[in-house]
Image (cartoon, rainbow, N blue to C red):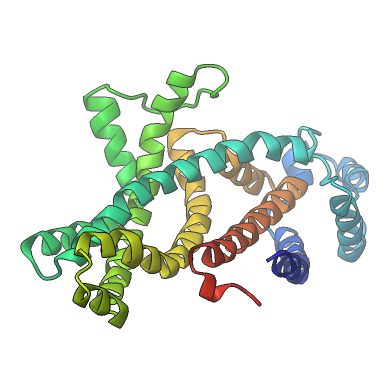
Length: 314
């Protein structure tokens, strides 16, 4: 397993390098001029030229990329063009909030999606299964941002049970942090819960129809024990692939949810840097998201081996 982890980590390096080249090129193709944003459109040409040179934007893209990559390999992603705050410091503040929101959404998705999928698979074709299938289809059809606004309208505006927007750090007030995370996490996890429920139902039906389950039933082993001890465990292997993909989706989707609920996470930082063409912040944020996605997929591969020894690398 150690060799597998090392091999996967090494194989991820070329991917990260390609991502960094693509992101750097794409960021510098944005039509927004950061110098004009800082000095204003009506600033004298001499001032703009001086600011361009000061920021190092008058050099070739290749020189800028090599300089940025060298700093990134040493843990220095540069500083914001507007606030001069180190990018690592800005990202460090936002990434914790974004990951906590994504993890909360995934916890809700697993707590709802897996039981619904298993229940539907145990009685396929029944009224309960059809009802669950309808709920899942509804969850897949409703966009997260639309559900977020609906939740705010019902639970925050009309009922007044939860705060409308805003974020309180966990270290400052745990109760207020929890209340502020409920609606964003619900909005974020609903679609993923539907995806996981559908995949779990399908995988469980396949597992229950497998020859080994029929053999165990023929030997007199109780169906409940077979479901809990064997079928669910084997059915989770394909579900893990979906969970890994959905975790990446949750991180990306949290950017929109953060904006709706005014949560100061990585998404808010990223959107603000896009509007202002803050190149260092943009580059650092997007590359970090790529690293998270690669690590999530690596974690899923490791879990495959833990759940099902047959798929462990030799």
